[in-house]
Structures are given as C-alpha cells and as structure tokens.
Image (cartoon, rainbow, N blue to C red):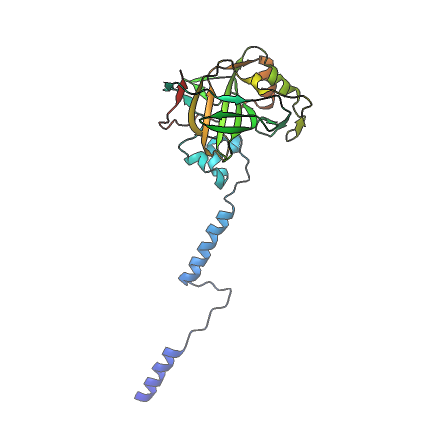
Length: 273
C-alpha cells in the first residue's frame, strides 16, 4: 500500500496539465505584458497628426507642439520668437553690412504666407560672419512688437551662414505711402496657392530697407514649425511705409498669419544707440 502511494505521488509531480487551445486566453503575466506592449506601439505610430499647422483652428499655434514629434520645440523651447522688444540695453551696435544687389526672383504662395526666393549672391555681414539670403516673406500683423506696439505687417528676410546658422532681419511695415518693391512682388503673385511665379524683372532689396538702420538684436527661434532655436534676430527699428491698398492685397490672401508673443525668459535684448 505504501509503495502504491509513493508511485501515485510521483506521477502527480511529473504530469503536466494540457496546454490551452490557441484561442483561449490565460492569466499568464508574460502574455498579458505582451498584449499591453502592443498598444503603446500602435499609439506611437499614430503620434504624427494628419492636421497641418496653421494660425487658426485645429492646427493653431498653441497646438503646434502636439502635431508632429519634430515640432516639440514650439512648446518646450525657452528661446522662442516673436517677443515684445522692451527693457532693452542701449549700446553701440556695429552696423549691419547689407550686400544686396538687383537680382532675379520668384514668388510662391506656400499656404502660410507669400514667400519671395531671390537669386544667390545677396547677403549680409554681422559679428564677423557672412549670412546668405535664403528668402523673405510677410506676416500680418507684425509678429514682433516694440514696447507693446504692433505694426500692420512685417517682412522677414531669412539668411544662413556656411555652417547653417540663421540670421533673420525684420523690417516693420506701417500704413502710409506706396512701397515700390512690395508692389513689384504683388504684381507677380501666382494665381494658385502652391504655384511659383518667376518674375521677368529684377528686384533690389536695398529698396525695402529703411534709411535709418539702427536695430534690436536678440537670440530667438523660427516663428513657424519646427520653431528651431539659435536664430540671431535683427529687428530694424525704423518702420517702412506701405499703402492701405498694398496691405489689403496681402490681407485678402492672409487676414492673419502671426504667431502670438512668446515669453522673453530674461533674454538680453540690445538696441542701437
């Protein structure tokens, strides 16, 4: 009898329960972890929103950082633009050496603004570095402010040096007399959004600059996604006039395309004496 009991106990220890059929769920913690891990993977693939960035609605500036992973800087950056230029430090800033010449150009309505691409060879020198002009474009109203004052429009002239560092010149635009260079751009607007119009005439960007070229300088960012920081901003202090009709042409296409003000975050803002 004792021998039979021992054999029965041994049989119980060595016999495995039958495996459940493949379609039966178990409480195996390894299986549960695997199922849970599959959900974040699916969520990660959907992290990229199909909503395009814009200035209103679902793609508005306060949502830029959530639209694409590469737009995160728009929400977490500490050196973002535009800002209100106040509490400045007045110093003898070196003069910006503009090297602009009559050049061929093309105009594109890119869905966010009117952008002008100018032939190579235009640029500026500041702080011992030369920056080549990449393009210029417009915002309405002005994105930057001076002691709280916002202007009717602004032109941003985007430059890059040989190492890819960006310097952007802001020319503030206020209602007044006709501006010949801006009229030349408007004369060659493409008829369809997304199209490019190669103008048959040259453009001379010296005609867009104010006579007095004192400026504010600070370190900021691009004002559109991905909001990359490390941009040297040069905001010319004296505004340039354009007519109400010229403002109306742009506002017909883009009634408002300005990013809201960003925190100054204690940045040093220099102003020419």
